Structure formats: structure tokens, C-alpha cells
Image (tube, rainbow, N blue to C red; front, side, top):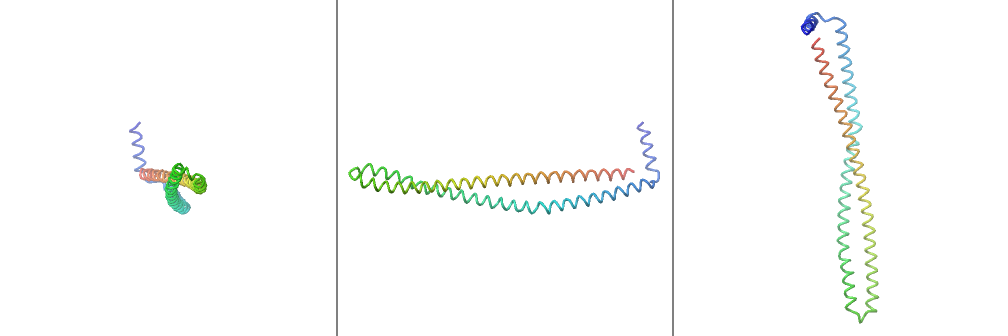
Length: 180
């Protein structure tokens, strides 16, 4: 049976190509060219649509990272500003114990100073909470950007796979044409 198939194929190769085969071949080539044109247009369209978005997202991500870094620096600065205030509160408490003979005057003064320091500490803590909320918001935005980037990457991978499949189909079709 294998010999028979070889003989049939050999006869087909040696026989002059029939008009129907030529028409089929021309139609296949025409459709292949149309499909290539369609794929190229689709690719250009996708690139024109997604590339500006991707660039904007990358710019936003970079700006977000810079803002996050600035906020972290500000948080660190506030933490450092908080340390001396806490040390001062401790110093005032020790001084209050050693000056018991002037308890009334020192107590009034200490109450005023401690009140001021507590107010400053509360203000710093409130600011710290605001900064933390800002950092969390920025992290959510960064995560959304990363998810969008991953989605775009996935779509591009699918598109590349389609192009590879198309390339394999074209090669197979060329081999089949050469075989006729």
C-alpha cells in the first residue's frame, strides 16, 4: 500500500498541473495575503491603542514610586522629630521629682509643656496616619497598575502565539504547495 501511494503521488507530481489546482493555489495565495494584511492591520491597531496607555501607566507608576519614596522620607523625618520630643517629656518628669520644694510652680509649667508636647505628638501621629493612608492608596494604585501591565502582557503573549500559529500555517501551506 505504501508503494501504491508513492506511485500515485509520483504520477500526480509528474502530471501537468490542472487548471482547478492553479485556481485553488491562486485563491489560497490571495486569501493568505488578505489574512497577512488583516493581521498586520490588527497588530498596528493594537500597538497604536495599547502602547500610549502602557507608556502612561509606566509614567504613573514611576511618579507613584517617586511619591512613595518622598512620603517614606517624610515619615522618617517625622519619626526622628518625634524622638527628641519623647526624650524631653522624660527629662521633664525627672526634673519634676527632684524639685519637690517648688512643686506648685514646676507642676504648672510642666503641665503646660507636656500639654504642648502631647499636642505636637498628636499632630505628628495624625500626620503619620495620613501619610500611611496615602502610602496604602499608592500601593493599591501600584498593584492596579501591575495587574493592568500583567493583563497587557498576557494579551500580547496571546497575540504573539496567534502570529506564530499563523506563521506555522503559512509554512505548512507553502510546503503543501511545493508538494503539489
